[in-house]
Image 1 (tube, rainbow, N blue to C red):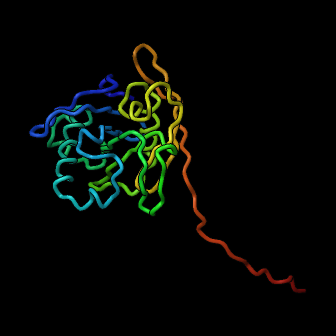
Image 2: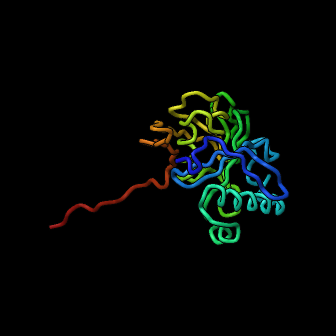
Image 3: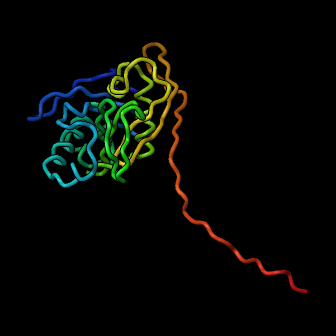
Amino acid sequence: VLPTGNIVDTLEVLDEGTFPVTMINSGISTLFFNAEDLGYTGTELQEAINGDINAFARFEKIRLYGAVHMGLSPDIETAKRSQHIPKIAFVSGPKDYTSSSGAVISANAINCHVRALSMGKLHHAMMGTAAVAIGTAAAIPGTLVNLAAGGGSQESITFGHPSGTLKVGASAMCENGQWQVEQVVMSRSARILMEGFVRVPEPTQ
C-alpha cells in the first residue's frame, strides 16, 4: 500500500524543487500532492489545466520522478515508456465550488477536493481505480489525503471533483509497521440511459 513505507515522502524533482507526496499502491498507483504546493487551489475544472502546455510538461516531469521514487521504474527514461502509471493527483480542504455542470456544491457537503490527471489530461470526474486509492489514503492517518479531509480516523469521505462529488471508504490496519487494506467501498452516481414501451402482440391461434 505504501511502496516506500512512508506515509508522506519528500519528492525532489530536478529544476522544480521538493514536494511532500503520499504514494499509494491501491486501485492504481497514485501520487498525491497538496494542491497549493503545485500552485493550485484544488477546485480547478478541466479548462483551467487542459489548455496549459507548460502545466502538462511540469506534471509529466513530476510524475516521472515519482515513478522512480516509488519503485515503479528504475530510471526516468524507463518511466517515460509507461504513461499509465503512476497517476498524479492533488488535494485540498473543503471549499465551495461550481462543478462543470454548473451545480453549486457547498464546502459542507464534502470532506476535501481531489483532482486527478490521466494520460496527460485533468480527468472530467474521477477514475474508479484512483477513487480506490483515494479511499485507501483517506483511511491511513497522516497521508495528505487524510489531512486534507480533516485528519484522524476516516472510514469514509466524500470528495469534490470537477463533475460533482463521490463517496469512498476503506478499512485499513497497520500490522508490524505495514499498512494493509481489508476492503474499499465506493458509491457512484447513476443516470437513466433509456426508458420506453414495448408492444407485445396478443398470441394468435
